[in-house]
Image (cartoon, rainbow, N blue to C red; front, side, top):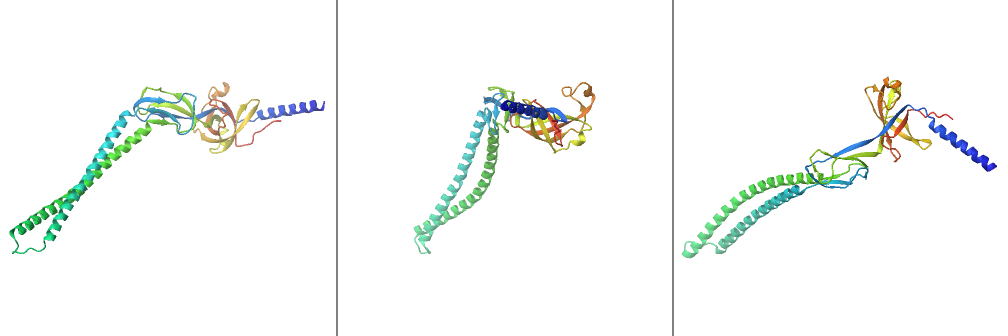
Length: 306
């Protein structure tokens, strides 16, 4: 008997607690919305792969789809070859310069080895000396010209190579944008294209709903507006079996203009009233779904009747 009596008391207390958690003086009602992101193509091409379906969960950076990059890869290879050709041309310039300097050094060593030749020297020696001096002058002029052309060639090559590197950087940027990844944690709400379809830059590919933080949109009357402060904390409730589940919310947006109460929110009599839309951000633990109804209490402790 004692155990039955204690069990009855427990059930009575549980029922009273359940009733008390549902009997809350609510300030406004509304429904939950998710922040949504429309991911668009950033380059024209055929969609070669599409790895997700509607309802799939995504994490930040997760692969979604890719666009054909064959033409871009060929263009990148052509630019890479042009850069290689310029560097080859650049390396041949000092090679010629080095050969001329080596020849000039040999001539100078030959002249130095002959020593001083006076007027009494043989005609053959004087001819060799004169030939070496002419060769030295020719090589010195060639080296001087090569120095000037070498500097101009280096400047020109540097400018041309820099332009090619900029083109290569641009191509790499476009190639990276041909691989589409998720910018947020969320769920695929809609797919707008399929594999093997042609897409263009700016065309939407997929819509992702970020469910980590939900937004409760409610409507308050003009006399309630003074108690709603932007950035203030509030209490948000959702239905959970026979009780109400409580969340901490933050007011993130208040409409600056009134509107008529939406038909799906209030009764016909109250539709003529002007109300203000309010958005409240709530951290989602997985229980809140898009379109789910919610209730809010602004800036005061919930009143519970026992």
